[in-house]
Image (cartoon, rainbow, N blue to C red):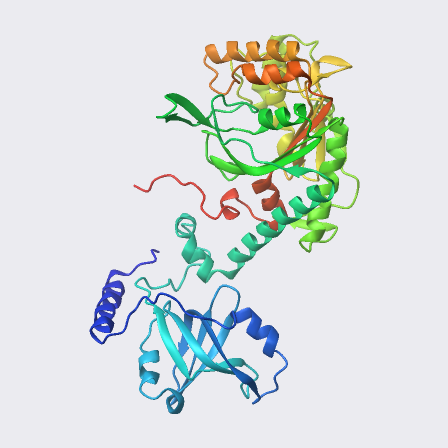
Length: 491
């Protein structure tokens, strides 16, 4: 079902012309409110039935309903903060009584009058004056919630927010979650910083970037895939604790878990490692859940999650055995690993090494089955070019990912601080790129210079804000937590 109905929209356009002929401006420049609607509920909530407030107030909102009853009628307006009833009486409004009743659902009005409680107990404005502030040309849909073609709601989020209050609640929670994350890091002495979103070299993640061209500089620039390399430059420069909450852009697929632009938290702490980042991650998410009013147990898509208990930790290789039912190691030859991957249904690039194959099998057999919050530690070096090598196994790095309900929520490293080793890994990435891997990372000479100045031991952490909001608001799709998700063009 579409929002607009051409016949009704045409009728409303004619009404606009009729209003202008009468000298009534259907699109006012402003309106002075003394109270938003939610504050009226707070201020006058103690009125008894039949009792009036002592002052005249002015408020405004969109008409959501009109109920006509002879010489006295009722309307409901909504300003986004709350809904509130209007009492309309012909002896108060005179000729303007019928004018108000001729207005349409969706029109925005300003009203003045005292607040009182009706005999039936409903707080209402006893309207003495009103103004049409905005004439709505498109009728609001009667049946919008639960549409089979849910993309209409995503494409017309402005209507979705008006007619589905639960949608607005999700975004109110999103705002609170981001505020609570900032409070958490600020209280621990982290500095919030901003790094470039247009970068001459995209780095910090294995991802395909968006590319653009800057005329004045006569050069290509890339929308950032991650802020990592710039944030680590700040650690080199002497900032011990930094974080950034901002947009990343990746020219990749769209799904219920992926959007080409998304919000990330990245944070770096000098003299820390991935164990410190693990503790920070668990503490932060638990505190954020409390801050937005959730208890020790939350429900996501019908599954109860115990947030209070210490979260499970296991290595990637252990998880393959315990959860995936396969035992893999770097001692196996490529043919054996490829056979396991094929049996698991994992798609493996012909040029993939052992670490990449093992990771693909993990993502196929293990990741979807990690429901309770679980830290997976020690990833293959091959798929993690920016992390410190594991001291017990040269094929692995000190990295973890946090999985909740089969989704990667966080990714963290003990950062690689050796500039010579980092150059070698960048060169290996460059070779992969030349072989056709568009997601392989580029060699960044300036970042290598920064490492040569000296990066102290550092722990780094990235958290996908959108996915975290999905978990904490029980939202099935990333599109449900993005105000304006990207969608394919309609035919």
